[in-house]
Image (cartoon, rainbow, N blue to C red; front, side, top):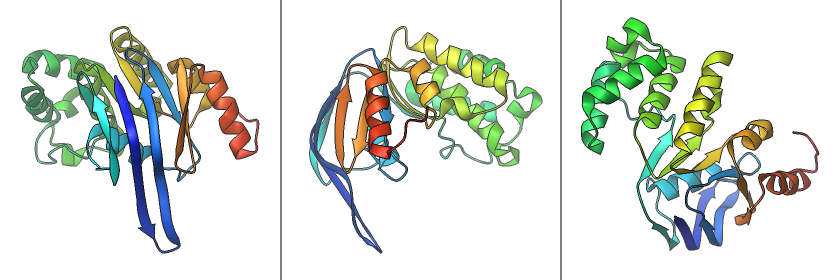
Amino acid sequence: MIELVNLSKKFSTPSGSKVVADNINVTFPTDEAVGLIGRNGAGKSTLMNMIGGQIKPDSGKIERTGTISWTVGFAGSFHRDMTGAQNTKFIARVYGVDTQELADYVEEFTELGPHFHVPVRNYSSGMKARLAFGVSIGIPFDTYLVDEVTAVGDAAFKRKSRLAFRDRMQNAGAIVVNHSMVQLKKLCNSGVVLENGKLTYYDDIEEAIYVHHINMGSDED
């Protein structure tokens, strides 16, 4: 379970103060995939980073039970001079999972072929994204923080990613950001809508999407 308690966060910008969280009180249920929805610039990534512990709130607190992943698909923490295999085994040791087992899973899942044993500095952005997703989903967490996981690769790999995510959701929960409302309907049961620093939880992802469309003044999927 993840609970946001009186959570507040704002940034100073050239055009004034930007409020991301305005005294938010929301509980994310255990073992459920929740879609995080909001307009561009609403602060979804900032909120995810606060939940993950990368950014501190100005006030309030975040109560967490169980293990929480880094943002699934985030490739910024790889050591560029290490190979994909070496990066994978290093992360396995950090999180206390079997190094070879994770390396075997990631090598098969990512379909990087010989590039899995090449330094990450030689990877394309797509290859790094595949590696990041494979490592993330290969480690069992209680809650996954997911940002655009289905945007990586061709149609076949996107489908493979969705299936892997759904498999993990059999025994875990998630907070999911995806700009495609169609994908959120496929991945999530419930949703939260972030608008003007306020976060509202809805038991039904369809209702969350409906409210978001009203906020945006549109009825598009």
